[in-house]
Length: 380
Image 1 (cartoon, rainbow, N blue to C red):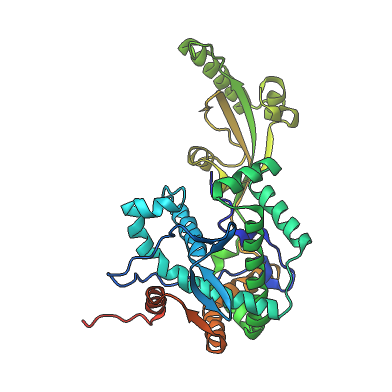
Image 2 (image 1 turned 45 degrees about the vertical axis):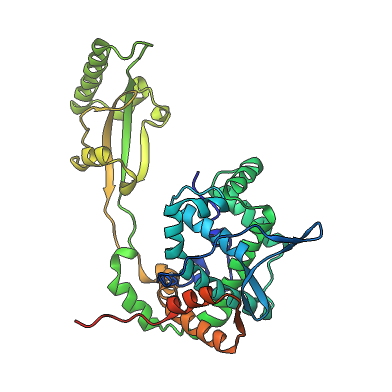
């Protein structure tokens, strides 16, 4: 099953600004590997005090808020799963040499992302942004709808992801707070003029096109099959029958009437009419078949898995540019998105200068600093 909780922010909707329709994602983090002699630690068995207290190893504190080794392990596993690597639990990270190598590659970026996330989330709380029960319910409903899940399916998916409902809520809340900060503090600083919107519209015409469509009428005849399969003789018989129907239509008989009399598809009640099919949604074979037709023409019979079908092309509309006024908001959102990466980096730099970041493990600190160091190119 696809990991439906990777991009949890997609489950949330905003109404604060126009750009909320296509909210920008946080900037990508560097992926520089740590020093060769340093291997990201994997969780050891936690020490216990008494019967219930678990002492967790703290990796870093950001303004007093901790990120632990257990937190890191959870993120490592999540990213490895996103990469379609087979990892069930933390013990796999210690025993699989391939996964250990992958950890060296992904851990520095995780550390950068974590510090940035904590700074953004903390700022969101300072701004009074809330993620209440109503927003959590809305997010869960969106997740279930987008992934066609009922409550049982959601519970199963959570189990497969190694998440509890409370952990999912925490993930959603972090995304909500970060995107709230983007909208309240970063986006307002991006002054987008009408001229810039028009320039973007002119430079990216293919991004704002109505879809090319076709309207067809179909006439379908099934080829019966048995436990032994399809008889070649029966297949030929049905093909000859539908060819005869095509010839009748080409000689002037009303095609819609022929559909009503002879078609075995559910569309026969509507004369076989299937309106406004988006061309890019067609299979390559059907697109090629219809592409040869002019309006009013009837295709050759097309063999499907269950029978033969004729198509009459009723009309074709080509892709055309959307009017600027209709897509102005979409353009604004795209410009916001294109600028968000750089603007958020500058915003985070300001937050870092004001933050108290305390590393409790020098090896992880070195990974973080190397990942954040400006990239330089070697001399030619």
